[in-house]
Length: 339
Image 1 (cartoon, helix red, strand yellow):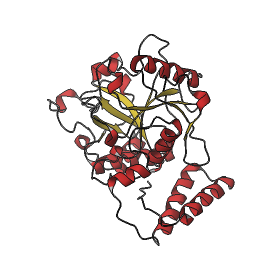
Image 2: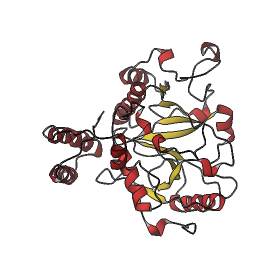
Image 3: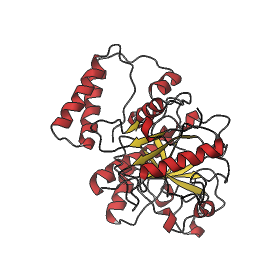
Image 4: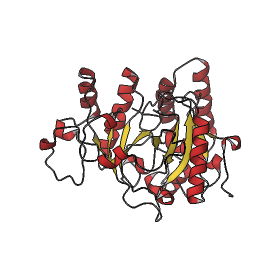
């Protein structure tokens, strides 16, 4: 797995060199995953000769596009790409990486006006959590389940208006099919109820209970039994990092597609309190739908009607030649919501 540190370059030369290297790799037909690995190694070599300066947390957030909320679609897409490319074990403030890096994304089924797609499903309400995926350039995510959905802001950007109990409960390195399983404690404990020692509070992940301490432990068990899965902690920064390492390793070797991140459910009817940063559509998905942009436009219009807020639609494309998988186009927007 690639764990990159952020450095401020004193000149543009290192950035230009890295961009040129990335382009050259693409011309030689090198895969994106291999390019990420080589690119990170070159970045490390270049920055080893550049004095790393003291950088405040807010400066890093600005560099990664995780600062104040923006209404401009290009800025949102740029911020998402920044977080996607910002690969760290933990945030500068010591919190798990999802507070400042990566993308928490929920792929949804087109509601066709029958319900609001941002509300939890009945199954999620029963389970106590909503299934998202968490992805960065180093999770080797290649697709999502449905062709559209919404993206949450980084946790460090949750503000006073955000619904207060959006707890990230656990993460699986691969799809855990929680919607098809009997699961306990927010969908995090895929073990017999009697072994779980209820009540559940605090860290509710299951890997430690099953003797799985690291990514290599998880991958080893998964390779022996494709049906095996367990969840890593979202409370402990190192455990969360191990889940990402496991996702990368398993995806490269087994062509797995996405992680499953469990976020505690919120009540119906609170769209203005949800930290939705963008709606997305993509052509890389596994379900049978094929109208991603239209579905995203319907979702955007519904959200505008409910909240009077403009949230941009971005295109997500895992096949691009660089790591800028998110892009914005005025033509994709169904409404500006009078903004």
